[in-house]
Image 1 (cartoon, helix red, strand yellow):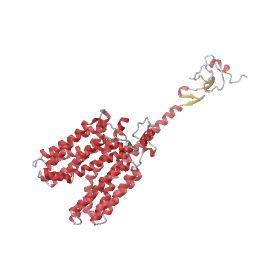
Image 2 (tube, helix red, strand yellow):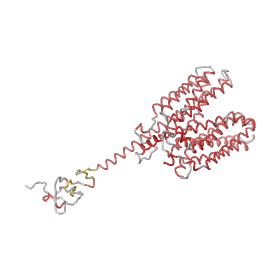
Image 3 (cartoon, helix red, strand yellow):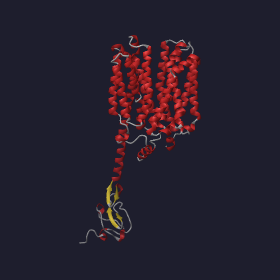
Image 4 (cartoon, one colour):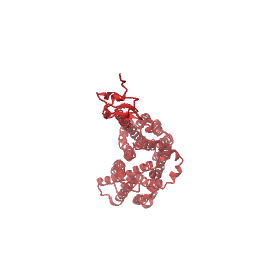
Length: 516
């Protein structure tokens, strides 16, 4: 009998195998008729390196590799990769939702704690437990500690875990509020509220760091502005909640509630927040999905630049943002603290009408902050200019702020309707909180990740300087020039900051932006 592996007996002159032999394979054989390197298609012989290697059965559904049939393996691998990518994307979205919710509720608790004592102040004054001078001392202790710790918190967020910093600050703030409710000694209150103010500085720098790690630069401004709105939302709802508790159970119960809520939220944040997507084995939203290898390269670049804090402070762009931030924060603080005084003394408005103006300003700030983030994200993705697009939008907001200040000081009269007065307050709130949100975004995203916290801390320090200048120094200006003189000064500062942005486009391109 002729052996089965004899090619001459099995292969026809045209190189095909008759009698349904397409289901078999010929291995380790040679043939003169098969000297060309052909692949088996629809029952033909596949030959490699001078020998017949294999036969593919229905090769349209399979791939021949190393002499073996890989039927559908390529398609299966592609499908598995697609399924894996979808799973990773869904996991990333779940983490983003959970972390953002923790940050939103946690920062709302930060704001609630920061203002909880002021909600109880009228009751404490009525009970004779404090004097107006004592209230001023307590408030000053908190503000000074907050200004210092906000800068330190920004620097620390580049050095330690933002998750631990955020949770620890909220825990310490809640504990200080609880202890505040357990004593009636004004000196102890001043110390505890200084501790509270110091703890408050851990909040926003941690938020800024986590937002940059977990969210794409394409919609970073939107997430930032929505998160800042948590403070406005807390400032709107917490006074009513505090008033209800104080009326029903007393001032100490109000502070106990604020402290306990913060302690619970601190534990929840500690368990929910993750510092970096890499720790959860997830891709970084800050990197393109088609360039996973760039993550390691960016880490190496950051390590090379670890000692570049001095270079950061030498960047003209940082000083431009800081100057503009100082101007708008000074205007915002001045209108918040002295706006009611101006309306009552110069325009003859009632206390209720003046309070409505401030409330309208907060409402406008809520929507203005969100609008700024959404607007700058969309414009930045569509408009390409040799300048920072977000700063140009901030300049437009500052122009609107200047116009609002002009209307407040020179257009409104005692005969103006309350609707008009509140409308001016809403416009001022939107036009001031918008740039405040933008300057924070710009400072955090325009520098390397390992310096973003420091950059934000620096511009935040400038903002706090503006807040300080809006206090006693402006009151001195008002004595000399009147409150209209103060408003005129604020108009000049806001207009100058808008002009500074428009005339310095070359300074808007940072080292990081050039690399990108």
